[in-house]
Length: 133
Image 1: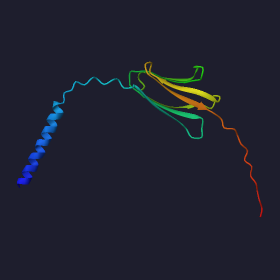
Image 2 (image 1 turned 120 degrees about the vertical axis):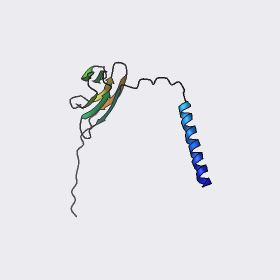
Image 3 (image 1 turned 90 degrees about the vertical axis):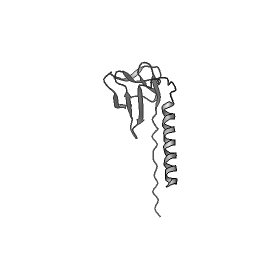
């Protein structure tokens, strides 16, 4: 019985000291820096010329999704208005020539850039040999 009381008393003291340490931890915390208001991900659909782009953003902010060539010319664009918070879309890259392009996602203050390279593999003829034995 004494062991139980001692264990319970020890547990009570350790819990109360933990609570008081947490409650007494009054470090002045700076306001967290504004997290990126635009989050994005992208991937290429296997065996195709389509690229899937997913964008999540805060309500009240705008965002633009752009595909640019090496000269900086905008080839494709999608604008997300203040009321839109998500975008899930496919960009068909089949009409673009081989080369390097840039996918840019921006909210006017922050910009995410990803390099996209399009290349066509040369067609190789398959030579099959039939052997009879």
